Image (cartoon, rainbow, N blue to C red; front, side, top):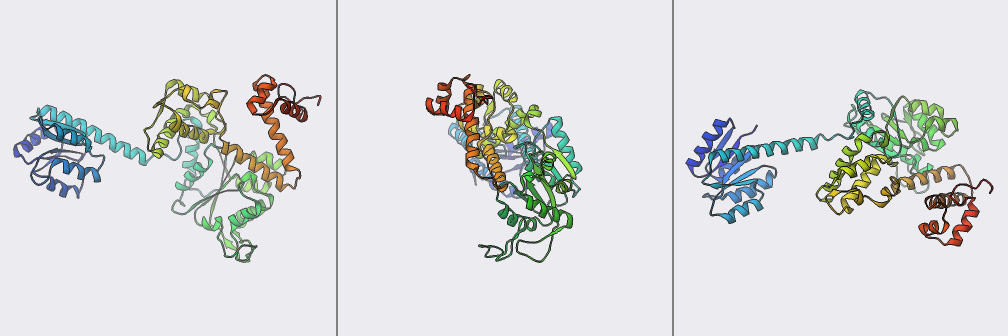
Length: 469
């Protein structure tokens, strides 16, 4: 433990502190003036600082302000006379931990210093905890298995396939695998292979030469080159177009690739980590994913559990996300009441950890009080289960549209519009028990419109497909 500093121009006060702190076994250092202490501060800070408020050559309040600028977490006790109330108030406004009124009882002073020492240690532990906050949180046995796997793979360059539902944290696991590997000092490059058209994805992955296609006015390095020596994370690999599956297989087999429009092979020193929410074995059976590429990627498989499989982690994650949102917004962290926490722990969270994080951010902004009750939760969560974040279902829709377009199918708009209307009207009728007027009101459409749509879509009164239609 670092020493306690005592600053007072009165030699007798310094002597009292020296004897009392020595008796208690607390290391100390005394100074006769503020400037002397400030000079010593350049060489290292104390555990606690005790200073008189009025001294020649620099007041305790000036010292307080100077120290707080460079060491905001350092507990500072200001000594002041009983009659100097204004100074005591000023000390608190300046960030003092406490003030000690003169004349003081020695035991009282030591007790106050011990309290300040305890605060200092807690602050230091808090800082250390913040520095070592794990990339992924989880105490459930299924998550402990994931952590053990990351540890076992830390010194391996093996290709890893991460599977799990959307929102379970696949990219976080990929990043953890990179950070704990021998490639940690090199780049970690991520790309969502389902988020862009085939031609653009090819250029993104492998780069292109100048003039390779219209608009290619300069040579561009792709993600494989950007990740040289490091890790390339291929997210949503199950949705990769067939032509690019062939090119990726060649890179994994030969360890080299060509830029689009290029003729010189480029060596790829990259560890590939892939992820998908798809059932790749089923995709292989359907002819949508190359079996040989599947076996190349499936060297080590790491499955991430859904949030409903690790409900015991919901409280831990919610507390973490509420604190994170509060820091980002510059607000005081809110907390969930026991009833609200139990309610959340019973939800299925189809959007998994990402959905819980979005919810906590919403609560930080919208909940009216510091303690969140069930009544403060968003309406859709209370009306019958958790809601998938819009970004998740929109992304899923975009991926499906991209897949259908790539297959060459026509009349795509009609197909998706019909499916969308069927889902909306079917669910609305199911919620209202088949009462069409109520369902129409929920959806914001007219009674005649919903009646016509029910007939067109082949739905019965309760929203199920009409077998006679």
